[in-house]
Image (cartoon, rainbow, N blue to C red; front, top):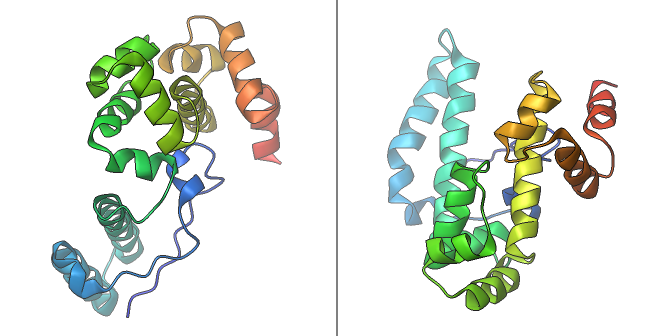
Length: 191
């Protein structure tokens, strides 16, 4: 039996976490893709060599990604980004947003990416993911921005890196999503 607790910090920047169940039971026999990962993980636990914790941390991350793929393929999570990733068309749009948050996305361009009409995409995205596509994009951008700010990147640079041409527009979006300015949020993270 393998049990793991994964800490995601505040989790602010990852919408994946919002709709995950508090616990997921997955019979290892159903996950042949995990055999190699689990083999290396158990060998590392037994050996306790130099770099042990770093290797275990990375292997746990790989295991988590493999489990998320399993949950997506089996549609184990209803609603949220995991459910969106289980839908082939929505997955194309979500993956594109995640890969290039700074791109000047519109509802029409996301619909084209998904291979759907604009109205069908908007309705389907809202129904499956639980928020309108452009709201999801805003939240994704702000989540990415939080990670960059936490690493010490200047707010003006972060604004550009996540798709906001002006710091003031970025600041308004940040307040809309987080409830406070980027500066106030950073101060709260330090305290």
